[in-house]
Image (cartoon, rainbow, N blue to C red; front, side):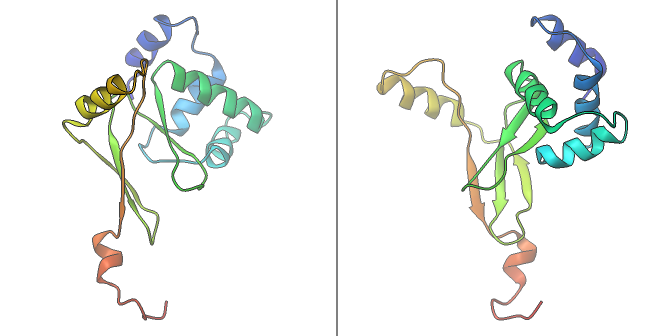
Length: 144
């Protein structure tokens, strides 16, 4: 995620780019989907005194202004990623690999369903759960 884009996003909000926010965005910079605890470990390498509470508050702020997206499914721990564009996910039910995908048409479906139910200011996400190619190729009774 480019710093100019981050600055623009923060400037449009009431927030500024603090050391903690910058550290969280750097922790998410490799494009992976990370738990708050993993983000904490990465941030602590630069800022040893940061707490998990600070990480969660920072993630909430970054999510609110559209710089971070959260993925949670089936009671598993939430995973966060730095992402500006709306996208959806493929989740392997075996190895838990999470892959970003574009799904054209989902926005219109979500808006139509919400409008028919009288909802406004909606958010939506699509998670397709199945087996990735690697896990699908492993026989069910294979010993690992």
